[in-house]
Image: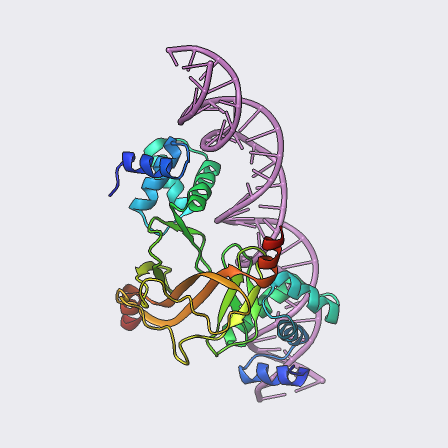
Length: 144
Length: 144
DNA sequence: GTCTTTTCTGGAGTGAGTCAAGTTAACGAA
DNA sequence: TTCGTTAACTTGACTCACTCCAGAAAAGAC
């Protein structure tokens, strides 16, 4: 787990000012991958005391824009954030409980970028979401 | 383009009652693939006169549940609906203008369902979204 | 034709996320 | 260290896609 000074370095690396809310948000997302905005606000407030929700929204946007965080929004779910960036991994989402898990890209390093017919689009990223049922919900469904 | 009686047959095929709003919604989605709910409401009202937005939401949900429509929700966009179902195709989304185009699945018929490590999830569908820039926006960006 | 069930209407409500204006604090330069 | 600039944060109102609810209407079964 990175420390506060690691986060500070990350912020400076992308020319963002180092502020307590930013460190706290970075840290919260590292601790709770795939957390939604509301939980992040909760964690940040636990560590820092009063922080406006607006600040958290701003910070999340700034960090996402700078590439320190990645925003994911599976259908039917609110926005969630994770700190694993730059490794092109994907996600499995449970249809029943909404749990999210990481999945490394099956096709290797620079993957999935082959659309059979791209309609003239210049494609720079492929996002894959696997839908299914998580182990817990599978068990629960069988026993009922 | 399917006719009203085709739509009627589709509805009966999934044991749904045949109502004017349902026919109108089905028809609107066939005419305007990837339309958002608001546009669909607009089209339906043009054909039918006054229809409550609630009715359209209900119909969209019923038809999606029955498998006659598919709901897609790329990040940063509101829900959109399309009538191509059951052929496992994917989408390209323009980062600039939000345009959506269909892409046939690159890996063939029953594709993409191989996650390298599924964490015990039972996966039943893989959804792929290609992100990029559409031809219009690419041209506009170059000329500016 | 009558009855039951499903659907539609209209209106109020919810909640994630945004906007705007003013205040505060980070950080480079003097 | 202090100062000034500029980015970041606070507060609070607001938007908008979508949902909930209760009553009215219509579809399909008998």
